[in-house]
Amino acid sequence: MLIALKEVSKTYKMGEVSVKALDQTSFMIDKGECVAIVGPSGSGKTTLLDIIGCLSRPTSGDYLLQGQAVQDLSDAELARTRNKKIGFIFQTFHLLGRNTALVNVSLPLFYAGHAREERLGRAETALSTVGLADRIHHRPNQLSGGQQQRVAIARALVNDPEIILADEPTGNLDSKSGQEIMKLLLDLNKKGQTLILITHDRDLAERTERTLTIKDGRIVDDIRR
Image (tube, rainbow, N blue to C red; front, side):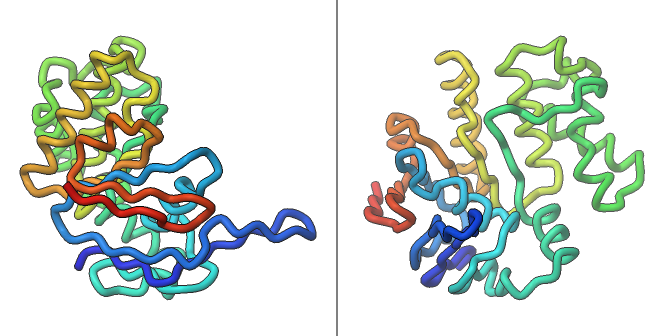
């Protein structure tokens, strides 16, 4: 079992008001699965992403990642876990505008303490994997939206993470580019990467093996195909 959430709740304080974003949510995800998490705005998708991605701790309940209780980790241990085990892909790319694709992709390796030659070599390999071998020295403003998202995917892959966590990865793309990015993600999953896709797009969700639906902080449906 790669991921296990057991009665996980998350409560935020907003002044004197407590807002429960997750309410005793439980599910498990195996290594190599391809899972979409869907739900309306305000359903708890973003909070769930933050907890799965070790960006936040649950208020109560247990989150086990490869059998390790994430809520018990220190901030430094959480940061190491994020860097080594989780590759993040965001809707807005989050690329550094002044840096080339090669440097952007190599950044996780810099934070992991790898030597420069190894960083650049692995970044170049990752960019080749996503079809951008001829764009490694281009900056973001020299790339299309689809190409920028491919750079973001290469950056997510460069540390060979256990999990690819994609948050609305096609949200800022035209339909053709979006289809290409989704195909790339599904192909990576077929090669063994665990893919968790956070989306409001039911058409995208139906291309995965499994869809979890969240509403009012609870998982209300779990469909396997």
